Length: 84
Image (cartoon, rainbow, N blue to C red):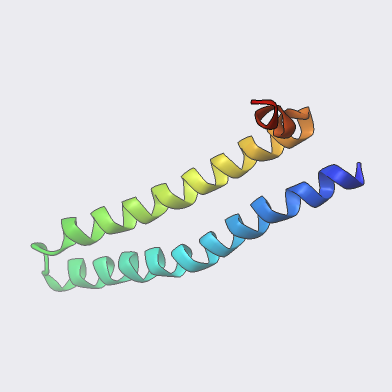
């Protein structure tokens, strides 16, 4: 069990770092889009919402990949690639 726990540390740490880095960027872009939308900056609004959506997709993808990797570690699949 200790061996699996050590292998889980790196994916979790990287996922947390990515969320900590991208999360505030998405929040700032979404906040700016809200401010510009309220003040009539409709030309820039779709562009900012696209960036906010892309950042959200990055966070969702990283969390999904991390969960998938943790399932692989629990299933013992992490050593199968070393056989080839």
